[in-house]
Length: 470
Length: 105
Image 1 (tube, each protein chain N blue to C red):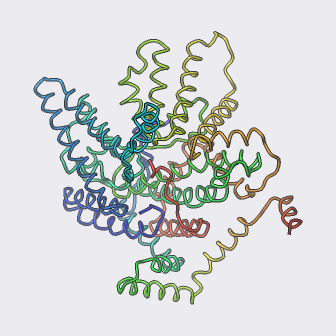
Image 2: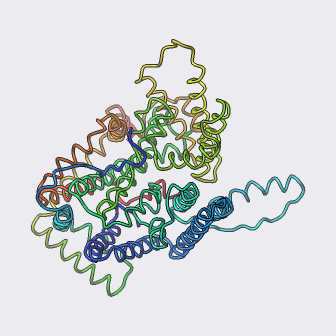
Image 3: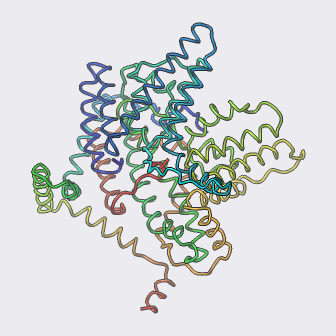
């Protein structure tokens, strides 16, 4: 069930009604209703995986209790933390990486003369597994670090299953959401206005901009780069940069908006990433919940900024390689991670060894360079295979003249998708404050007309969000 | 730059008038009504996609009834006009390519 569909609308409206009628009388019932609704939402993909979700919550809940008991007794939490993290990684590893490792193993065994028919398992990837397993791990680590207290089984299961963030984030941490579950939520006019703006804006970005760019330009250029002109390939790469931003940030916007209508505050996941003047800044603005997760639970665990500059570079490289691998078991994701890790390391070395008085790059030029490094990374990220990515670069370099695919509308969308990164950061709160003052019927009419306009412009059908596959 | 736990919905606004909950209830209700009147065909198209059966036949009948009623009153006009204009924008091509297309034909 995708957010920008009537199916979802017909699911969400009754949930909203029940939650705000029954839920006002009892917060526990409110949470139970939200949990059941989340399982129905998840069950739309595959009912079997609801059991996996519950099992995952039960494992994390049990490990958290065991960790807390050991901490209370003054003993080390490491054994249970290790078991809990390993259990989460085992779930993720089996569903996401088993096939990849088997594929890599077969030729190695064959070369060693042990050619065997390895078991072929058609493993279906449960939607959102990378998100809820990361959430489970951060919960256990936070408890072991005494940064959060163990949650009740209901709160933890709801935290991991809560439908607005379940399949594509943001990765909401227990320390942020569980305290909200404990209190009876209160809606303010500011929250309502912002939520409705975010939902309409997300709908537009996903169904109009991302879908149009994907079908009109990006899918075609990446399908067969050798058949395209140089300008189309360049615009295809820029188009993918805009598509993935509009697709993923649209999901986050709608997730934040839907959660807000239910009374909960999710953190910001995107903050105009293409206006970054360094790659470090880019990662503070792009998929903030994942980059902060990688920083807090992986980079810092590896030693973080302690030690010498080469040690820091090693940690950056490992973190970004694993960040790439988190996206999927493909060499293209690993190269994408390596590119980001390498550039982050170079930035770090430059900061360390930059000659005194050496002039800094003007900010617009720095933004332009970082944007093109990010776009180069997106080519690896988007290509189906490593050969496909290399073919894309080769054809781009050859730059065959002409322009066949990119229509004025698609070019306009690329410009639009980049221009929105340079609007004032206070635009949303300013708009929300104004909209919050509108009478409710005017607000409702405006929302209805905004959705109507988006529906008239939208591409036929809705493709799944890019981050559903992760 | 935003703090990692900042929420975009933390907006301090004038809270006078209806409460947030009442504001949401009325706004969502009006938005749904607006869409039901101006975009009823989307509901009918959705109903057509349901698994065939007695219940889906009833839903489809209601959806098509609403779509016919709103179309009779011309309420589907704004969406159709918007779509027509948007399709013209989509069909536009760069001038030299349009000439190229014609010469190819």
